[in-house]
Length: 110
Image (cartoon, rainbow, N blue to C red; front, top):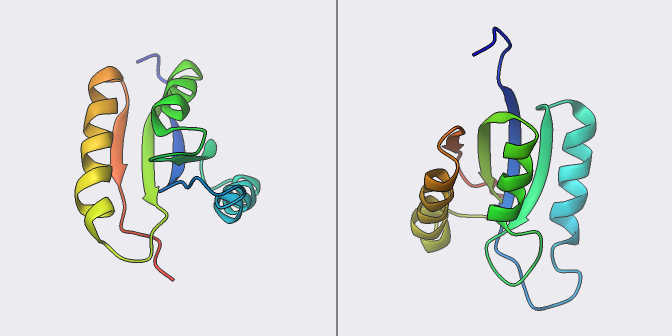
């Protein structure tokens, strides 16, 4: 390291949908969180069907020098997607970007 703290990011991770505009609320929340200065970068990503995908967002963050990512599941409950799909995806993307430390948080809830 060069003495500088690693850039931190937060990624809201939602399911995604084939329906137009279904992720709009999550995208707006990410923008509002970005304005608060919660982290150096705040982004939104989707598991399926919608863009941007989680791997695409992480690739952009890695290119920007982000070293830590808090993954915030945008789900009401810790169901199958949160317990199985999200950890698998984070693990797979982590193998592509070993320079990034990932931390998956509890689902957003209601």
